[in-house]
Image 1 (cartoon, rainbow, N blue to C red):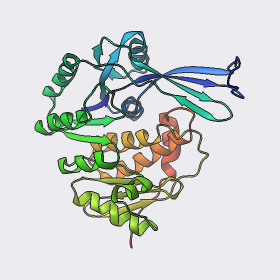
Image 2 (cartoon, one colour):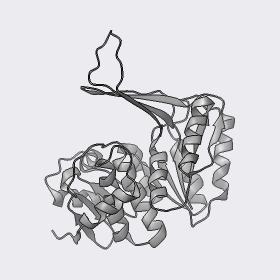
Image 3 (spheres, rainbow, N blue to C red):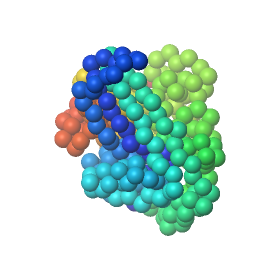
Image 4 (cartoon, rainbow, N blue to C red):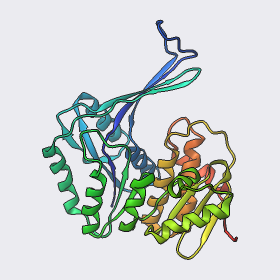
Length: 305
């Protein structure tokens, strides 16, 4: 089973209007309320691929009820830990400029954390847990590392979507896949990357430090998969970028979902690229039809220095 963890989910309240004028009454042209959170995004992509998964995390109040009911309406399986405080609301204003006002998240008690952690007692070596998104201020900054210890003690695999020092600290625990983009990779090692050879060089260092697979997205320049045996490259498919939010989550969902089903790194790379690009070319997260439309454009080749 694949489990996704969204510690700090939200209602994403999207407002669209032609122009936002501060200090005056503005009338929207369109609005939508969607369940938000990086792990939730991964769960939605996994569902599009037909991959069974369970969404975990913390939900509370009427806002939490909305998120849970919205996910159930999409036929997603959930086992959220219910808390006393309200799940946050993030406001996304799309006008002449895009403006986001994000809530900080609810207070979570130690008792609620204990209830949440008990779910990891049932993990087996056949499971994968995907940890994504920000923590709430009331949780320890080491919360994800506490979860990783529980996961590895059960022999399960994990994926954590993070960057910087937090990513480096997880590598010794052998994550199934890490997914920095080329800018994040440069920041990790404090270097300037001059072209794909440099990206490959430093991507391999992440393998040496413990990652099982390294995915590197390079925006319009395509993507790389680095494994202990080979390096693979694919050009970016053609399309108009509409929505970059959720593209990285989609890439992780495509890779992990396919790998769980096939254990084939190359096919997982293909689906990861297709899912990420399909979301970038969509208003919301990609659906299966858009993923299938993009798949034939993904041409993977062996990378040679």
